[in-house]
Amino acid sequence: MLVLARKVNEKILIGDKIEITVVAVSGENVRLGIKAPPDVKILRSEVYEEVRKQNLEAASAAKLGDEEVALKLKQMLNSKVKKKE
Amino acid sequence: MAETKENKQTRVIVFPRGLPGFEEEKEFFFREEEGTPFAHLEAAQNEEIGFVLLRPQLFLPDYLRQVNLNPEEIELLEIKEGDEPDVWAIMTLSLSDLSKSTVNLRAPLLINFRASKGLQLILSEEGYPARQPLFAEPVLPAETGSPKEGAVG
Image (cartoon, rainbow over the protein chains, first blue to last red):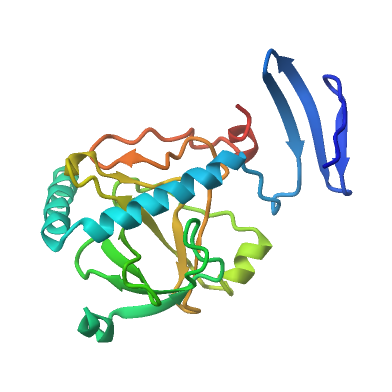
């Protein structure tokens, strides 16, 4: 891994199109500004992990939830939706 | 369950990247429950892996009204002119208390039925929760905020 030391307002360029600026440092928090083309996906890395965990949980609940449970939930949702209409 | 897969409403959808947590599963059976906002997604190679899906617009009419896909995602979904991907959200049932069930608005499923391709998109906008309670009013990010602003925080 390349490690660079930067001060506030200093930048890092990645390729021609991505620019990262250290906006502020406060204690343990670093605020970064990122300029990148719209097709570059920028995510906090925890987000992918969160979605992964959520998928695993959703799949195991869907497996355990029998037809009756699913039916009941649907009725609850349908009545909620109808109330809104 | 075998006979339901023969059902004409069941479609085989290929998720070329799999889904986070299930990266190996590429092929899924998709079955929409007619007359309801629900659908089922089941891994073709493993019927133990399944999801209950919900049409999120039912609760949030403005949710993903326009989806900004990058060229890679457009290619993956094989989107051509006139194609409008369908948007679905994965529900997490809370079996001990159904009213605590949630829906994942952070990572919707996009399905291009014409090409039978699907993708779980992880939105970069902060503010769409991965665990939106189904029975609470959603808190939405500001309408006009650009994704760039959403990423600051």
